[in-house]
Length: 180
Image 1 (spheres, rainbow, N blue to C red):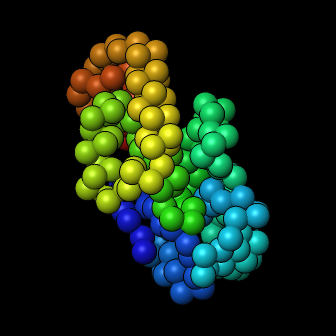
Image 2: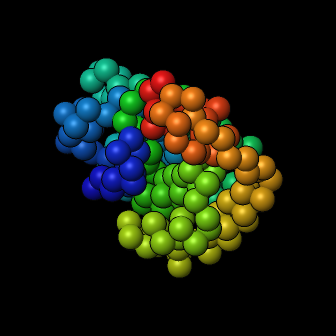
């Protein structure tokens, strides 16, 4: 089941053949798999099988193994970089969708400057189950809080449309709504 987080980012748990075909039909261009090679497929495709089917459909495939007990800032940065650099709509997935959801929310919190409260409200809307992974919840809170407190908030006026936006968005035109 695909859960749309934004127009450019969706989340999923375990994938089967039909899911990958549907992802291709919906116009997704990149699939990021957060499972390790040793994780059970839970009734779905293994990472190698997902890679094979995705690339056969012309989708870019990236595997970034994420283990909750070993989760650290460097791993989150690797996932965030992959999301920033990925072409067009991206599907981020793992076995249950919880790691994918948490990492996507950390990414959105940092890229959009969303507060921890806003990220957790979004998590509730998409049905992210934090209760089964309290360590992941705590890491997410700490990561977003650390990131946001480290960012200097500077407001600038866009030279194209004259809107006021944060300097961080202005520097990364891809995130800014103005094409000028």
